[in-house]
Image (cartoon, rainbow, N blue to C red; front, top):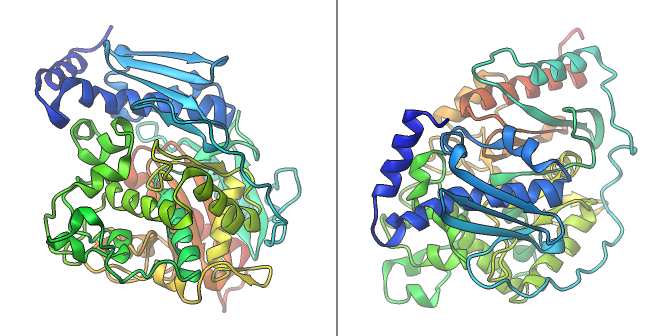
Length: 466
């Protein structure tokens, strides 16, 4: 039976009847869109039992209304249908190599066949079998990150891969998961967006400091917004803050964009300017979705060209054959949040940045691009660069991570609920950690300790007696 607080919260949300983002059906669509997308990905992309996955992966805010969430997984049709107390019905559909899409209108045509993967340029990181740590200290580090020391704040670690000098030196998976299990990166996908922009910059198709000059922004102050502003979250657009996760997401334009809009970038482009471009930092998925449309347009203008670019210029050369970059109905990638890949392939992505954008003697990212992504953005209290979180600079969060043992040079792809790919270039260390940790502080503490202990185990600092 639902608790009185759960009933009160749901009633309060549904009582805010109105139009726009406060309409009950649109608010409910955030919860149902989130659920249908995750269940679809678990069942058809990750190959996991969707209900078992949902039981461990739903965040605390969803648990309060889970009693009202009706859900149906249709394996024959490759779709998931959800509603919340009869409101906000959403259907997520598997679209082959384009992953799952939450329908907010007609089902787009089936994705065009993607080109085959070419030869991988990145040297193979491991054989087919999981690599147990040979170093006792490294084994102890993995044991700690999989242990549940505090039952009130579970880590729910599901996969860890440690790369040192391009080879897996340790990996571990929770029961039911393995080296072939694709997992969602959430906002780690923003770092993939950084990489795709780097590819296009290397081709001379985008200049990060040049104004976008979108037609919708002609004649107003938004015309001065650059790709760099968007990647660094300093566009000044008033489109909601995407750092939190709670009931406020029901009315957040950023969250409604992900789960209730067919053309995600269109919603973000229409946002008003709240601050002059380049003067104010605010983390918002809308920034990255505008960049995702830019990537689509520069790649060729449609879904097939966009996914083809990702496959030929990034995933193929890195050997990331498991990567599923999902798209919206406009054919643009959901570059703010929606890529699934195995933990090994997330680590391969980190290795590209550990090697300064060069693999197999071929430069995939322009010279200086990796340093650009890791360079701190002024005014970002979390320690944010250009599509990556960073320990460089003087932000309070960066200093805390360093105090916890993570090197000051480190930078990372980071996603909601404890997804990390941490890169320490000078030590050639990459650590990928994926799971369902709903305390950002606990997730940060755990990854910092894991990185510090992994470094001490595999490459002791000069002067150490290990």
